[in-house]
Image (tube, rainbow, N blue to C red; front, top):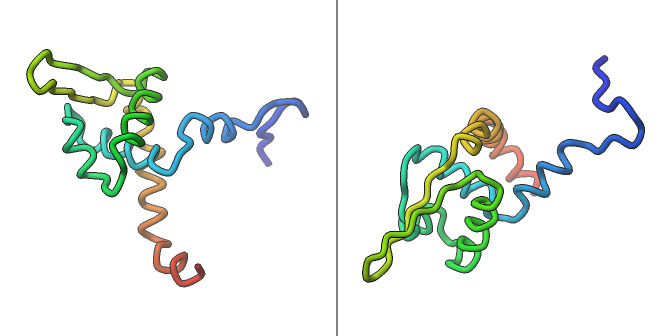
Length: 115
């Protein structure tokens, strides 16, 4: 049996993870950015994960940018063009999110029947 915590006061790493990616749209945003594997404009990202609101998408992207998971580039045009791209740090989430997506595909029907 593997011991997860070495001391009683060690914090569960999943609590930290959930705090970083909290919010209904956090994981879908990160997953779309990872799967795009390149730059994506704000509007295209919003359409890809509809029905997210512009306000919520902006909030989540700013949080991810402050954590170093997403890069944001603003072009001084009229109207302004803004592009987003997952960072190398953000890309390290790919295996974890792929695993969650596979689990959901495998168990979706069973979960939907239960709810």
